[in-house]
Amino acid sequence: MKKLLNSRVLITLIALALQLLALISVILWFYDYFAFFYAGSVIISLLAVLFILNSRSNPIYKIAWIIPILIFPIFGGFFYFFFGVDKLSNRRKRSMKTIFEKTKDTLQPQPDIIAELDQRNNSAGNQSRYIQNYSYYPPYRETYCEYLSTGEQKFERLKEELKKARHYIFLEYFIIAEGVMWDSILEILVDKVKEGVDVRVIYDDFGCLTALPYNYNRYLEELGIKCCVFNPVIPILSPRHNNRDHRKIAVIDGQTAFTGGANLADEYINAKELYGHWKDSAIMIKGKAAWSLTVMFLTMWDYLQGIDEDYEQYKLKDYAENDKEEDNINFGFVQPFSDSPLDNESVGETIYFNLINKAQKYLYITTPYLIINNEIVTALTTAAKGGVDVRIITPHIPDKWYVHAVTRSYYKILLEEGIKIYEYTPGFIHSKTFVADHEYGVVGTINMDYRSLFLHFECGVWLYGCNIIKDMYNDFLKTLEQCQEITLQELEKVKWYKKLMRFILRVFAPLM
Image 1 (cartoon, rainbow, N blue to C red):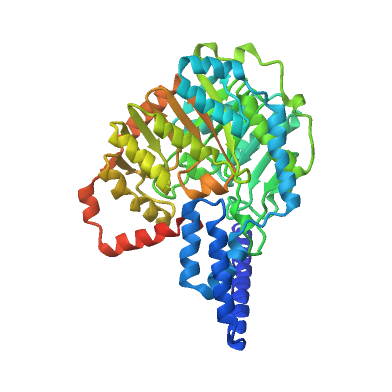
Image 2: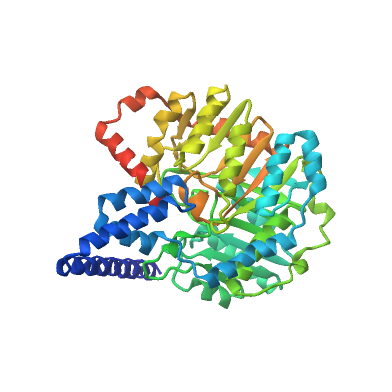
């Protein structure tokens, strides 16, 4: 099995390298034989720069392309038009537009709930209204929520709920890998198929490139599990590989749903050690709010399958009273949401931005990647200058050294403005959480980097006034006990060449 995985990766890398060499060779061939080629290349590069400046791309993405184009005018413009421009066909854009249309048609706005939220806190009402208007996912009341502070907790609760399934199980994950975690879940799924449960799985092909064998979806189909592969990796140089399905969704019977940072692989439950101890988090919701995550999955499924289902058949009316766990129902507001790279609306970034701006007492953040634009830097530092206790936990042992170098390049400017930064000493922290003022919280899949905020399909759950916000707060403080605080004095000891490397990598962070 490992040989097959390695062969697929090797073949893909060789094919991409050969295409890249062929492209460079063609350019050099023209350069050798045509006197006006250099002038033409410069003109193309200048046109590329003008195109970038007038595009709707994020400024940091523009800078990341403009600098190499100006440094290498012969290759820069060609490479941008070949790799940097969104080349989605009109057909694909139309087909993906159905995701938004079906979501909007299926999920009904909740003006009464937002009005109630307005009365309680107008600022929170505005944030909820934004999510409903631009992501099409409404808020819910009286939804049971459970914050799962580790991947191990998520694993055990997920298995418990999967065993209760009576009608359907929907799983959508960026990474699924054979091992203790997935094998035990797969065993449950196979048993449920035999019971007549509709089991469906979506996985991202790039995320699973080294984790699953080629055509693993066929293997699942043979077991009776319906399966779709998001954006299959093909050995062709193309910008389409930038858009990935980074979501982590599990839905059981439309009444129980999970999301958060943890994928279905052994490192997330520390059954396998990759980068020290792995710290993650997730959220489980029960009740009406689970319907939003159900629709989230179904819209992606229908797009991948090219079908148009009646979603009402999956909206169960027999939500069992004994499953409500009445003692733990919170009376806050719960709002799942999705973020897409194709709608020109940065929902995830705006939600994060609003939380930063609205925090009055404290704002605690966990993120594996702290690669932020100037707007987020300004918002964080402004909050800290105004007296808000802003604390951020990042990994101490990185999964990608060059990405962590970029994360560390932001430490100095944040520390100088009063923000406290900590690194999770035991290993790698992968959770993506925001908690503020004992009132607001977000748990989801969205990293604080360019790819998550602008290129990937993502999701999360926005919370206001929920009892689990206190659990998130306590988990943050408990995690701090295992962290080392970063100080300006420590940063002064960093060698100059490391600082230089961090700053250089920071410029090209959106292209990583």
